[in-house]
Length: 315
Image (cartoon, rainbow, N blue to C red; front, top):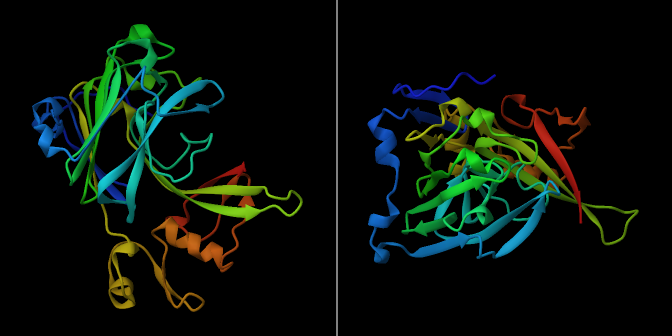
């Protein structure tokens, strides 16, 4: 349950297994220092620049069969470690989030996201609304600028950033948050603040030729308290060590990073249960056969036996 809205200056530290988050209140100097003033940056400092507005749509898909979101695929100039694996490109969405998956589908808001404030935003409601991004070679800054909620235009404008650093740090900074985030409607669009990662497995369907079932396994997510999000607040997420950082078995099995490792004779390598993408390899080799119970995966493959949500898509 969410707590009441709190603008205190106290720094809140939370351990999420894959990340440690630090939440800075509006009165803390760090929250102001984390904001990136793009207007003051020299254009020569940015390797990649992009802009999305109500009149600039690169791609468009329907989400929840109601909302239309605009997306822009962005090739990063640096390798960005996300949950321990490397991303070379991401997708910026007008709905207040970054999609980290490879395949576009109708469940885009469900998982594989970096969301400073995922909500039902609509750039077409104002000519002043925009989303722009800048990449300087070590940092990507995405700013949602003066955007409105589609189902509550009178709430005012929202301005916030997501900042991805080459060392894996993720920062959310907030300049304009006109309403309590807990009160934003979820009727037509989910409202999320945090991270999520998953992996995808393709299954051939024998009964239907040329049709494949795509199963999405969400193995972890970070939920940031919405009550902590307000004007001039910030969230900093620091990556914790995972098994993917080890290239040989010795350092892997002797590491003290909070995950259990074991030897896989089939693959001739260690299976670290900290990263879902490695578990995709296990599934591909039929080493582990997951089963579904009441809509949830209930195996021992993932950290702390956490529940893994499944989505099935037909292509």
